[in-house]
Length: 431
Image (cartoon, rainbow, N blue to C red; front, side, top):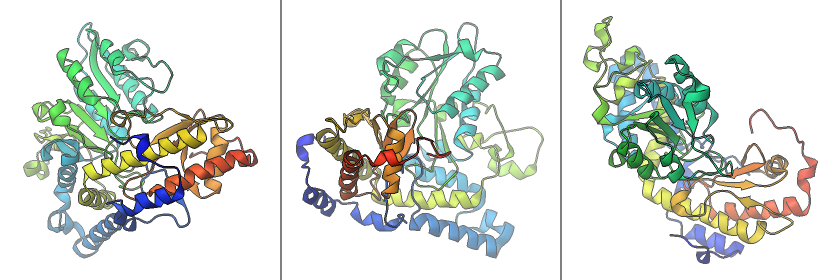
């Protein structure tokens, strides 16, 4: 584990870390905004040569083959979703037929929660957390309404002492005999806390409660072990750390022990592949994760995901995790040393322990919105979450240690010179 004693504060040390970085050549794979330090990969990852080339390949197949691409493409479009899921599966600790690239994150939440949430008598509540990304909570409330529940009573939350972090033991204690489903994030999107998914899945299993995870902020950052943990279902987006592109299709995972369970929300692309074009009126789903597909896939956007995954596979998820932890550990070290004392007074809310943090570091400080604006004015791209939370995501594949060092120096100067006072207190529609 990386310790603070492994680091030094000087610029020369940052450059030496870059010289020793085994992933440094992957920076050339990405289109990095000219003259900027991009630290927003936890919201939208950057375009890679491989993703671009994959889109152009499918465009070429469309140009030359037309509808023939469904069966004659290099990767036939008819099974492209399943093959892309197969590329993703090893990163998630799953078998190839347990993962499929399909739909969008919120659609997959509705589909999977609707399938696994089965209220029965007293056991009718969904256990979630109050810090989850709002779309997850919107979907859970709708699923309760659709099945006759009362979101005000039947959606219950494990408490957070500070509104930023959760304690897994508290979550487990809330798994009582009224709970019909547990649905949680792998990483809290604001604070960057990584939950102990293995422990939570084990506690849910002891109580015979199905459990699912939204892995949008961990997929592509670290290796998962969904099969080993015996998670029932999971889903995640592909446009953050997977670098699949804006609005790129999502993934879902269904543990193979549930393959005979009927999907609750169905569409023709989940039909048994060998008989899909029989166009029969009665639905008969694929007996794998592909059965949870609903609509015809968007081939151009999925092609980008395929190409992006190839880069991750070449780099290796374990090497990515190693560098990600070192980058965020270095950032935490510099912030503690240089930005924690007054007048800077930045508070790190991300857990410092490697096993408890995802891929970004969250800072809390008064005037966080205007400080983010000042960073952008300097060509450093973070993101902002209410209230006063600055998220910095140094990404292993395309960020450098020197960029981390420069960002911390910029934050010092912004406070020293009070540059943030020159910026508006009004938040932009996308922040």
